[in-house]
Image 1: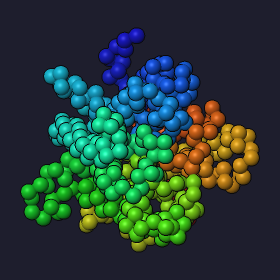
Image 2: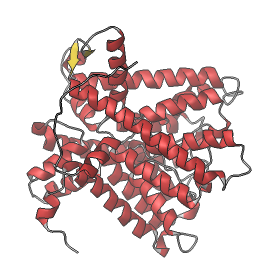
Image 3: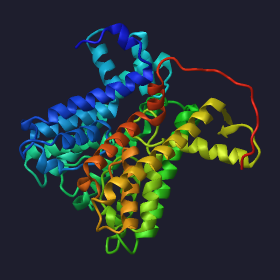
Amino acid sequence: MVIKKKYVRALSPQAGLALSFMLVILLGTALLSLPVSSKAGPVPFIDALFTAASATCVTGLIVVDTNSYWSTFGHIIILCLIQIGGLGTMTFSSFVVLLVGRRLGIWDRQVLEQSFTGAARKSLIQLLWVAFLLTFLLEGVGAIILSCRFAEDHAVGQAIYLGVFHSISAFCNAGFSLFEANLLHHRGDFIINITIMTLIVLGGLGFWVIFDLKNLIGRKNKIRSASLHTRLVVRVTFFLISAGCIALLLLEWHSALRGLPIAEKVMAALFQSITARTAGFNTLDIPSLANGSIFILLILMIIGASPGSCGGGIKTTTFAVVLAMIYARLRNQKQVQFFKRGIPDATVSNAIGIAAAAFVIVSTMCLLLMITESSTHALMPQRTLFVAVFFETISAIGTVGLSMGLTPVLSLAGKIIIVLLMYVGRIGPVTLTLALAGVHARNLRYAEDNIWVG
């Protein structure tokens, strides 16, 4: 059935963005349900849906082993979903429109701007080209490096296949791997680790930041030439990666990292700190980590990547704005500031709304998962189950993909809940709320009264 153009244009940009991801997930589900997609015969609908949602939402949580369960055709479908989901469905479709020589309409620009999280309209088309060219350039370079390294252990064709798959999966922050133990057996390989980490960080900065950094080439005093957004994203990203790495080193030095050379310890901690911010690869056995390390990973996962990037989470800037708001209120300052620049009250309200929405969604879904999984995992201690459920919930809404082993054994209801969490995590809770609210928002203001708080 063809939807008339006027009905499509009646959708709000947020609804258009949410609908586009949903349609891609459903298309991916249909393709993965085909017999040719699997090595093991007919694919259960829920497993096809879960995998399609995980790939499109660039999460990386899996209910079946990617390499042994899916055929080459299935791998290609998963890779295409990762690429489309990483770039953004509307970004991808808009680029196709430009390639065939058509111009973007006003509605298309609004939806595209929404997917880029409010990028400047004057630079929107240029940003779109930069996003695609940089994506394929960086993925291409990563694929060449990884393919050359994998060629030492695999046939040339298989090495190229592995290199391309893992490069795209890393840059899109997806975390899908064709190795049964993910990258656990490549923990000591500096080439693979450094390449994957670099791709993850670049993919998680956000296309606007990369676009801004590109414009700084050749300028003097580069850090002052960058926009406030770029400076904040780069500094918060560096802080989170460094703090996470140091914390994991201290907590796991005599535990999960015991017996490893010092250089390998540092690299493993750094890798896990980077990948916890929405990538989902792992070189450490997650269930064996100490409780303190699990807590650190939970914090990194819920913060996630940066706006307009391939990653999820509440975003680095949201985290920074909320902390700055708390700091300002404690000092009785009325304005939230960064680098001697004030932040608009509307931006602060949005940040608080995003953080609050994430808290409500995580709490609700975690409770539902405890209810649905308690009977299925009756032999597991309830506190152990709670930690596993909470970890899986944060991993899903943060589109991370790290798991404590619960995902493959989830009940039917549990899988559906995780699918919903991945979907909400990719498009953002506020975008989903605005999409459900519809085009006609009510902006009524009532007489004010006061209440006591604190």
